[in-house]
Length: 353
Image 1 (cartoon, helix red, strand yellow):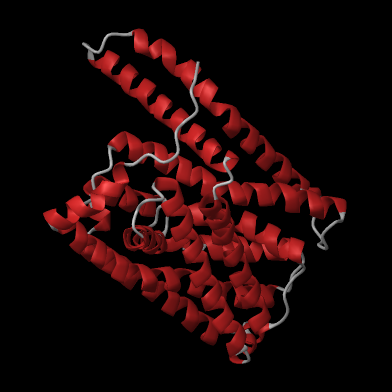
Image 2 (cartoon, one colour; image 1 turned 180 degrees about the horizontal axis):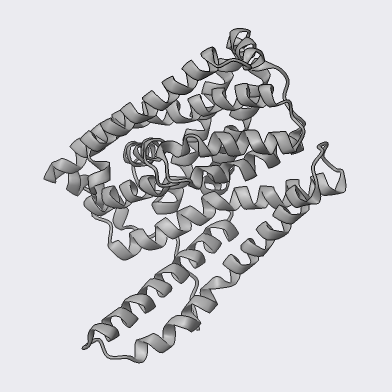
């Protein structure tokens, strides 16, 4: 197991995240000038707070669904839940912008018997299909805000420009398999005898695996796989709903276009290498809502509530799953049992000339 995924290491991360949340909570209650924010917390509606928690549970369910549908639909639901929710817990605790969860998934699937190449291809496909909903939403909502279809007030720099950039990323990704193989083929002509030859072949194999992963993602999307399409959409949509419910708990919900666009751009703060994206994500979200002319105190209160549940729900659900997963994979007889479905390739890549 990678060192950062060791239980002792994760326990330290839990303590760090808890300490940061406690410090922020103390600051909100004690720092002068935050009276309006404190008042919003005091009068928060418990019904909407419960809705935030339920929405995050539904978002996690979407993650489990798309994980199982991408890696192997024959995988047992129990194993799918244990691996995917352990990934979600790792994403909440590790300072890696989501890479920590993927690393845990790779380790678990490898221990369960899946080949390295299979894991690599499916991991790339999984990352792409879960990102597809976000990029598609940026295009649709960004254009909708710019054209006045959705209510919201922001400059083209935060509506049209992100939509255009997201559309370019989608197009380049869609066409990338041919480009990746074109760049990789000349490297195959070198001998593996020297270290430079081995490096060139490793690069070529990596490019080929990436191309196969993109092709697999395209195949899954073209086939309108229920688990992939519904799971990836639910994973994003219920998380946005949780943020909206957070606003409802402390005041009023911004217009649909503003809520979605500020969410999609603000989530980039999660890429900052701190545990759970704490600090970076909150600052980016509040900043985006301020740009969209949402009351700052309202945004601070809503984002804090949303992020508290976004971090806590996966951690609470994923910690027991992580323990169960380690126990399953620690026993040879159980390990052999869970490996069987993982060897089945349900979605075949299209033939290439």
